[in-house]
Length: 65
Image 1 (spheres, helix red, strand yellow):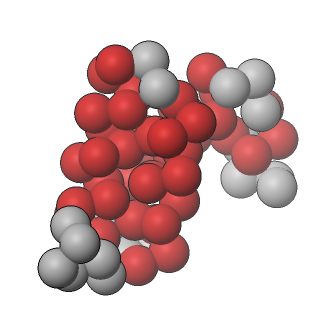
Image 2 (cartoon, rainbow, N blue to C red; image 1 turned 45 degrees about the vertical axis):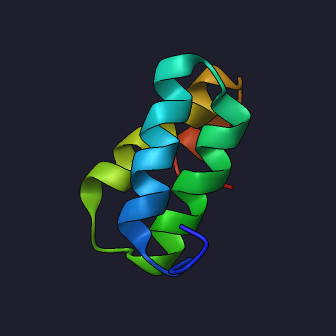
């Protein structure tokens, strides 16, 4: 990741790992970056909404940040 920080898939998978391990803040950070780098990936937005929901951020989860 340090060598290629602009790869959306790295951030996506780190976000998924964060969700799986309960580190939702870290998950949201990585998934936000993945969405910024590759806005066309619908799965990124789905998992980002899940991270927001787990952090009790319903406005962001619905896309109304």
